[in-house]
Image 1 (cartoon, helix red, strand yellow):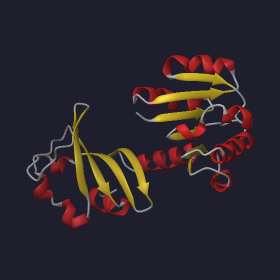
Image 2 (tube, rainbow, N blue to C red; image 1 turned 180 degrees about the horizontal axis):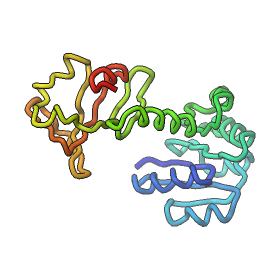
Image 3 (tube, rainbow, N blue to C red; image 1 turned 180 degrees about the vertical axis):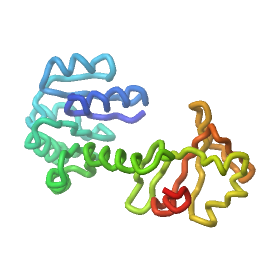
Length: 215
C-alpha cells in the first residue's frame, strides 16, 4: 500500500485526496486551514493543521517514510516553492508539485520538485484535442510523441476484425481495449470484432491517429 503526504487541500488537493482514498492509499493530509482539514478527514488516513513552510513542523511528519509527497498548494506559490525545497532537504523520496505557469514549473524543478503537474495546461491540451473531432472521447498524452486516445468506432469499421483493419501495420497504432456499455475489455485479439456502439483505446502517435481516423 502506497503512503502519500498530501500538502494543500484546496479544490485540487481535495480531489487528489478523494482519488487516493478510492485507490486505498495511506494518506496524511496537511493544510493550514482547519476547515479544509476537517472536510477531507473522512477520506484520508490522518490529517493535520500546520504550516508547511515550517521545517520544524514538516520534520515531525516523518517525511522520508512516505513513498510520495504531493505539494498541491494553489493560492501561494512562494509557500509551494518553500515546501518543495524543505521536503527534499528532509529526505523526501519523491516530490510532486503543482504549477500554474511554465515559470513556476521551472522554479519548482530547480528547487526540490522531482515532477510537476500543470493542471491548467494539461486540461487545455485535453480540451483542445477533444474539440478537434467528435470521434475523440478521451485523450492522455504519454510523452511528446505518443498518446492514448479513446475513439468512437467508425461506422465503416463495424463488423470488421482487428486483423482485417490492420492499423498496426498501416499506421503503427495499437488497439489496447474495447469499451461497450461502459465496461472496458482489454482482451483484444486479432479476431476481435468491432461494433458501432463501441469505443476503443488506441495507442500511438497523434499524427498517425489523425491520418487513420481522418481527423
